[in-house]
Image 1 (tube, helix red, strand yellow):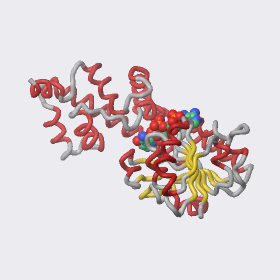
Image 2: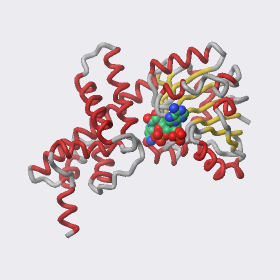
Image 3: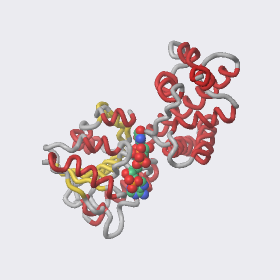
Image 4: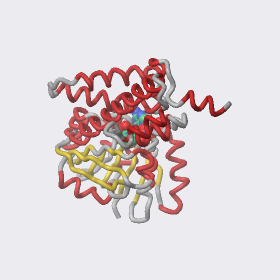
Length: 309
Ligand code: NDP
């Protein structure tokens, strides 16, 4: 029976780990805030034999595969050292699969440190959001050795529908960062356009209806704006702080590759400011409210106010 550990039971880590809580896996979970891991074990432990680890070292003991899903790569690096760290117990031959949307430079450093102990590493960030994780339908973009990927593929298939080998270590991180930079551009650009249209007398629902059957459409215009902005629901599923981090990674990547990238650099700056303004808990789509404030208009807001009177 494969011995698996899952570290990081956050917004997306929890539904990912749930798919590993099954009889054919020996699963141990660890989370920095123990209450979350205790709740997870209370929910799944009895039926599926999931166990709680008190420290990363305890989680890593005798494991074949360790899955991490933390905010940034440096958080993963921070789990390695000390008497409670993963390196204290991880056996040679184990593989650490990091599903954090990480940065290539830190991933390569982690991979080197693990390789020195005979431990494999793959960067394996995911896309598809919390709902994709709940459905076990994530896309997983993997960087690192292909034979290692084949070894861990059955585990990844528990929560991933598309598993794509992207290149060497850090390739998954790089691709994920660029994808999310595009997401950020679509959100910001769509918000600017809709605020301008509202002020010019075009309702946002009418505008989105047209855009979504035209060439300006995106996942943001087709899903995020109708479901989260027009409704003013702004559910918190993916923190703006994390999107800020992703766009920053993409902007750094472009600079390292010495390409001219004004749009990436500007997007990174805009999301850095929005993050600073809205704080650590805000959802990424709440960045629309910064565009609304700067533009002095509300997307769909006037209509809602009229309807409620
Ligand atoms: P959350 O902020 O919801 O959860 C973060 C998790 O990491 C928590 O379990 C938290 O523990 C733990 N953590 C935070 N800092 C540390 C640290 N220094 N050391 C150890 N553990 C730590 O993040 P998400 O689950 O949303 O995101 C996780 C990763 O997945 C990120 O890289 C994100 O960009 C990516 N991602 C997220 C998506 C989403 O829709 N949410 C979609 C695709 C990718 P604690 O409980 O103690 O706070």
